[in-house]
Image (cartoon, rainbow, N blue to C red; front, side, top):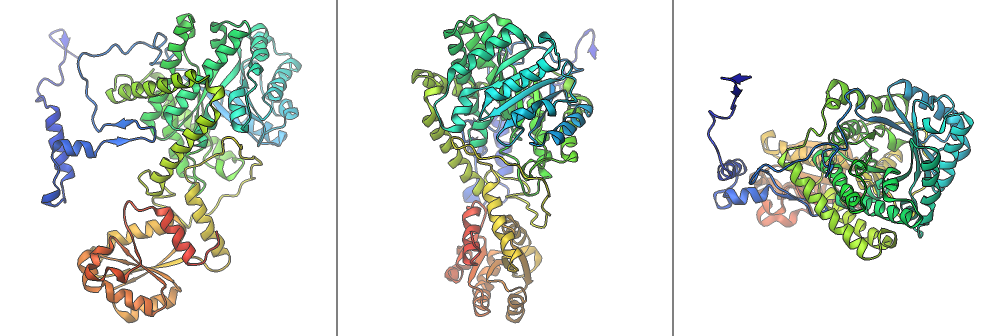
Length: 619
């Protein structure tokens, strides 16, 4: 649209409102229901809305342009923040499905089905939990190798996986220049997983072989998903990716391979999560830093862009209520696409149960299609670019990651920093576990809104061993352990049960009843209820469900009036542990009538573990 030949100023009839006005509106919203002596002013309201990630990144509630509009750059040019080039709307990213079925016949059928359904390249897990190297040829039997690229990951023997793929290309008569894929050589990640020193020279021969014979194949994968699965933060992943890439460039340079050729042989594999803005910023920051390394190494500008393979996080997947994983991986895939990944792998929603079925793999590959085509995400390059939130977060991640890269380099490189890396990851795990346990960081379907009645899935289990150097630390594992204890007790005919004693009218206890039932559902408790303070009804309810744990649910007025008497009736009926939904102080002078409380901000894992222990449920 235009007016008198010029652009339309859509904001010209709206008043200009400043930061102070926004603070006042934020304070007004936060002050609803707060007592007068706890009212917040604008600055305090803004501070309350500020958050800090496990990487110590400060997330502000509002981002505004300060000063002149910065030069955001362009895709395909320094600093490569906005991508390594314009996106092809007809083929916006490589749809790369992971296959780890150890049965070569089953793997062959699954690969064929995926390629027919829209997958454009194959990722084979070879070794631990996947195919044997000798079965790679059989699994790829139906693949048109001149059309579909193949990527391999070998654990623990990366060389065997690479040799198997090279041999398949040779036996199938694929012209060397027609082969597409990646040999998956990453000795630093392999050594870190195994807890042994790295063999850095392992990168040299595969790189030379690809440079000389297979121009369409990359030899090296800088895979930081193992660090992510062990609990690393976003800054850690970017730091370790860049530091590992530097180590490989240095090693290759020492063996006569120039930096430009080394850059051309590296692909980065990084985890993407349902934290969409941080994920977008993480990928953009990685490209920015890698381009800076290329600039310092005199790599021609066109060769400095980081090629990124994004994989939806295995750490964020839950075993219980696995259908929520579809939402998690969809958001993660959206973020990976916005962040400019060249290849994306969506892990199936049932991955934590074992080998995925046809439905799970179909949903995984269709996630790409829906986002790229029906949502038109594939038509846009760097759609988040220019958002002051994303631009600021990109800069903060890049600055924090670069600072750690410099420290690693000063101390001899990432290859010599195994224990420091593990210690740093352990710090992240402790902080994240605290947030998860208190539900400051929630997991829908697991720690929030759980469904204990959700039937388990039936899948062929994976035969994968946990890497000793970087053990996997899934976010949901602590809650699943509680659910496992409850399931085992139920199988023995003694499901853990708690009685909710709801005092007063529903308007008095409804909110706390729902909250408490939600908390108990995290551990798979069977929940019984009784309404009112009638001693006979309470005693009958205790006998009817056999509960040895009871929780009072109501408001402060009813607690003061009826709480102590209800607690006494419960104890007379044989209840061993009486708790209160809220704070014990709401009982007034009778707060010793209960043994503890269920409240927002509590350590849910610790509380539920204690309840199961009180009931004698084996660990």
